[in-house]
Length: 179
Length: 237
Image 1: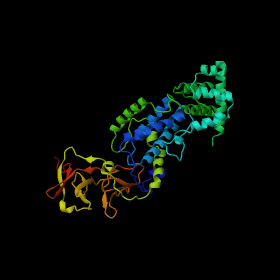
Image 2: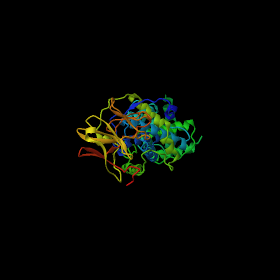
Image 3: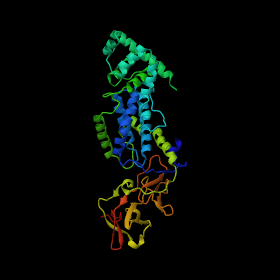
């Protein structure tokens, strides 16, 4: 890291690859969707995902040199998104809730964008039926609390309690599975 | 504990609203994380998983505004927000670029890319004139002929019989380039940047690659090669 700013230390000589973008608009068109989806998967709401996506591109495009390869540009955008997301959590909840990990896969691959569907399926599998059902209804299907209560044949008050307990248990399972 | 903050946060997520900040403890943070993942695992139309077209269009407009005023040398803007500065100068971001590039730390064979994709654009002065840089006989095929007009310096050479010229000043910090004939490349004495005769960057050791060399407008008339250049600084037009 410090070597970056030290003019006397030798730095590796880099060849410039041939596959690059022609202009900043091409960078934006080609990468906006996966950057947005990567952030949405980690904030869970559109308003924050849009703001953070805008921040990534506003910060990243200006210093970007177009002689970088597509792979380098994508790695740079993912690294910028990681910094932007970390700052978002620091400013809103004072702690890191989700992060953008270092991964082997290309940043625009499904596995890199979100592991949420796979992780959620694993967690739901371990829950008792009623807990799984309320989470599926509320979070995955987008049913209202009233609709969910009717579906499960319980009162709205009970549905609220059920959802609360189900999320607590799911969080314990989910965090227990974290490496 | 902050049961109310958590409840509101989860409610907002479920309603698709921007959640409000609060100070969660460890277990509340874990529940928020799980709620976000549950939300993100949702599939189907109108979920928010894909960006809205209106958002993409609007951001494109904002970026265009920003990029129009961009100076050639990326200087930090005075009125950037704290977070933009943080990101723009982030060592982590720069390091990531360095990291992915490190496996390319080879002096690749200097293959020539098409001029269109490699040139930084053409140097076209506001107040230029055709100025002699060499006699035709001084620029045989395969030779890189240096010239210095006082206002502009560069190199002229022949490609398929036709003269072409590039600027002889490094696009990083303006050091004067020299031609390394055995390696067929222009080299910068300051930071080991090298350019192909077309102007394309071949090697560099900077966090982000410098721009390619601008090309100059060149013509050959009556046994003389001329470049369209601004007036000499000592003899302003």
